[in-house]
Length: 483
Image (cartoon, rainbow, N blue to C red; front, side, top):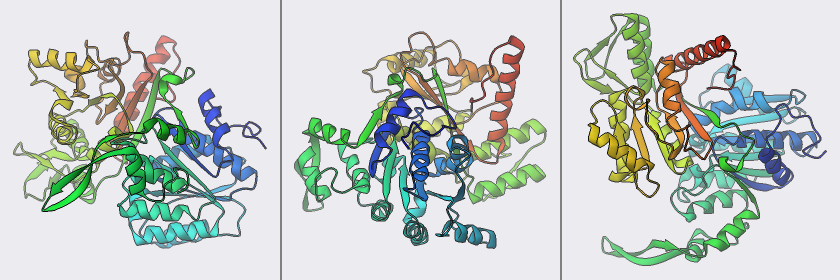
């Protein structure tokens, strides 16, 4: 069977077919496909091909927290053909009778079904997670894939070492990411080492670094060390990477829609769950600071619930109180996976200021411009001009849709991130069009960060329903894939 021979559940775009043709029977391969170009589907079609040809009976997919549930709930059901008999398990670290039964079933090496185990990358920092992954790989002829593989770019990290070691027990290996190099060309070393240590031709990270980095002596704490001051031989490195990878950008995909929508899901922390549950049930909650937060109406309650999902809440005394959460971590992960300038919309002033502060610490003081009610007219013009200037270091436009969603042009960005949404459909559509308008030369990717099982999902559902109703009235095609 060739990859073209089976009936696809969803028809591939031309670049997805090309990626599948290049990778389908390779023992190791890298899919360097920009976010929004559909690399998950390519992997699922590859799994289908290998399983249908009797080459695998299992797959272990490793992904970040904001992505790994999406494989189970959306990607696999959407793209894997129905004729594939399969058992899918989402890794859970705790044990109940039900989870134990699922673990026993997924490890069953006598079944002819395709076994699919999806784990979050953080679980591979734990002995429990590593042990279970090893048990799975040792019992199945499996493909192992690392989604958003920059999560294993640090050669000294425990999870990187564990994942590279586990890869030796897989019959096939894949890495998937839109931006394999986020900080320096040295990022590629451990990602390639997971695929096969021989691919780059170096026996150690240090010999690889010596070939491609310019080093100088540094001094700290009375000792001498080598520090990277530049890079060399990058054309050679690029040539080597092309032998086992496929690279595609949105701008290369002529058949992609102009707007591509991506969901990134996060889970509430225990602290969030406590406050959220109390507010939802009793419309009042006691915070760890002994301050209280209450909701006197349905509208206030919805606002409070969304604030909690975002990771903070305004107390009855008017003080914003942060609640432990992973939303900022997810934003930073997304930014690491993207290149170029980006627009970040947030619904609350507290979030805008926190995003601005965090990004300045990581990317530099000149990398961020915040655009909201308190921003002066002079500052607003400067932010827009600097953002639109491709040579200006201002990379991130952070604002709310009330202030920045209308009348301005932000076509320097082809990535738009909704840190949080509101119920106003007009503001959503207007804010999308800041990047998608005359002057935009690229496809635009819209990424929504959603806190699972919260009002976040209800807001998105309400927006989608409003949009489809409007399109129905106007006789236009409904956006089934939106959000």
